[in-house]
Amino acid sequence: MTDQPLVLGIETSCDETGVGLVRGETLLFDAIASSVDEHARFGGVVPEVASRAHLEAMVPTIERACREAGVTLRDVDAVAVTSGPGLAGALMVGVASAKALALALGVPLHGVNHLASHVAVDIVEHGPLPEPTLAMLVSGGHSSLLLVPDVTHDVRSLGSTIDDAAGEAFDKVARVLGLPFPGGPHIDRAAREGSVTIDFPRGLTTGRDMERHRFDFSFSGLKTAVARWVQAKEAAGEAVPLADVAASFQEAVTDVLTRKAILACREHGVGHLQIGGGVAANSRLRAMAQERCDAAGIELRVPRPGLCTDNGAMVAALGAQMVLKGRPPSNLAIPADSSMPVTQVSA
Ligand code: KG4
Ligand code: ZN
Image 1 (cartoon, rainbow, N blue to C red):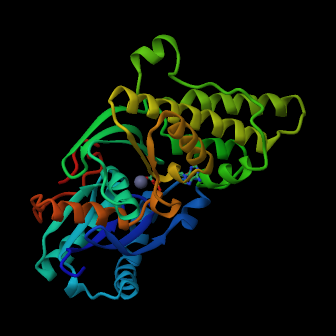
Image 2 (image 1 turned 135 degrees about the vertical axis):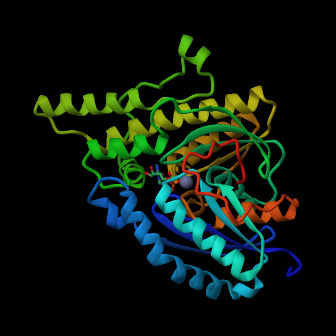
């Protein structure tokens, strides 16, 4: 196995400092340090706080990843890093660290796209990605349907959100319900105690909206509908059935996501659906996607929840694919690109 390339991946696009070590298509260790608790009281990620936390966590997290993986930095054959998209200052810490490491170790640097990394991580979980794969990326900043002929250089966008991302909707609705940030896991947990009793809107799924936005999403109207429903209850002096609201909201999101993902698979003749990004950790989304894929004869691939949220393993996984497929490394002068488009896999 040691003839396979050992790639160290660094992720700092948001609030997780992630360092992963992947050899070929095998994950050796995934070390994470999160500053999420420092942001919770602000109700969202504060960029300056995230950048400083990355600076403090970087070296200890690299050391921990190597120690737990049983390797030393001298064993590393290439360094991969998220070069975008994400928070500019946060990305800069990862990119600068990766450049320093690559230069000091005399190994190639691969600046890669955070979103393609969310897709590539499934390789270390379930083996090589079928080509093409249909990928649905649902995170705090993005909701996209992607046709992926080759995750190392050909990622095509079929559609994306026209307003809020799926995770953003979870976080905003959680706030309306008085649940802590980030709201996704709290809504997921609350919904397990509730029932789907409210018929919330499914954006861009009917009539002209569907014609014009076949593979796009919209979650802003749903978020407003939930807020109005809760306000009306409160104004009437009635108790808000938190678990039922959470379950009904979650059902609306997962219904739209899975419906459009399966339609995209059908229309593009793709027999595999891969789901990635933080919202892919949602238990209802995973269950509904499995039911609907089974019914449609589509093979579903979703990594374990810990590999769906941001981590370094996903960057190392994509970096290792770049090395295995002989893709050219990045220049040491690459910038952190906060608005790197989803179709650009590497810097
Ligand atoms: O991919 P990720 O870790 O960071 C971004 O690149 O954005 O995704 C974070 C998002 C947050 O909005 C969070 O609330 C959501 O993923 N999330 C969930 C769950 N776990 C995390 N949403 C729904 N259900 C979950 N279990
Ligand atoms: Zn992400």
